[in-house]
Image (tube, rainbow, N blue to C red; front, side, top):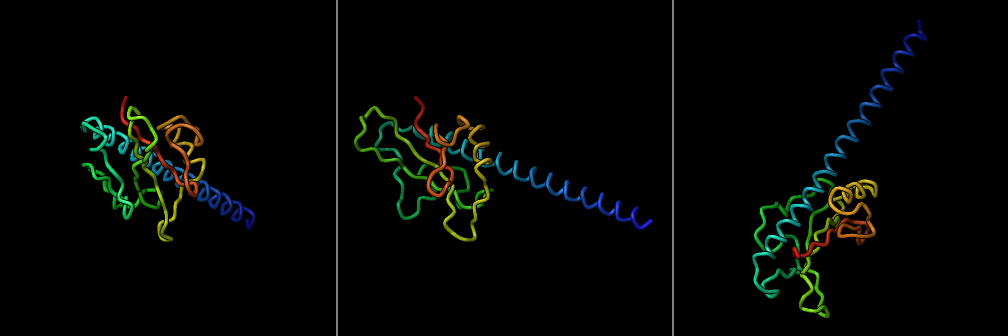
Length: 159
C-alpha cells in the first residue's frame, strides 16, 4: 500500500515537472517571437523613413546621451523594457569614408546595462530569432550578437 502511494506521488511530481518545463518553453517561444517582431518592425519603420527622406543630411543621427528613441516618427514604445529584459536602443552607423552611394544604416539593439534589466535570451534563442528575421547565423548577416552578446540588427535603406 505504501509503495502504491509513493508511486502515485512520484508520477504526480513528474507530471508537474514536465508541465512546468513545457510552460517555460512556451513562454520563452513567445518572447523570441515578440523580439523578432520588434526588430522586424524597427527595420520597416526605418526603411520607410529613409524612403521618404530626400538626402543623407535628413537621415537620423544618434543622440549620444540617450539613443533610446529614433528621431523619426515611430509608434513603438521605446521606453518600455523588452520582453527579454533590457531595453531597445538604436544608433546611426557613421561611415565617413564611404562613397556617397553607400546606403545609410541604423543599428537597433537590445542592451541591458542596468542590473534590474537582466537579459534572458540564450544563444539558442538568439539563433532562433536570427532564423526568423535573417540568415540563421549570428556571425553573418544583418542580425548578430554584439557587445556582451546582446543582439543587434543592422538596418539599411531599401535598394
